[in-house]
Length: 68
Image (tube, rainbow, N blue to C red; front, side, top):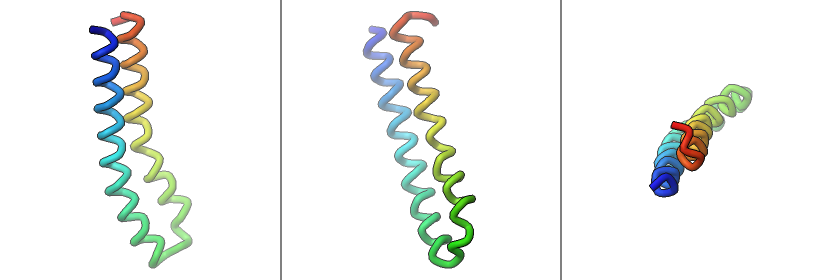
């Protein structure tokens, strides 16, 4: 059961991250087309959703080792 829970945690986090990054990525392309000097700020906005998958990984590890 712990492995199934870990798989669900990783899958859910990956899907959520992919959805967020696809939306943000499309917006970034539009902004960079008009103002290329904003690339540093846009990179930060693209990386922020990656924390979701990191938290999902932590939850999966905790579930596998039955820490919770």
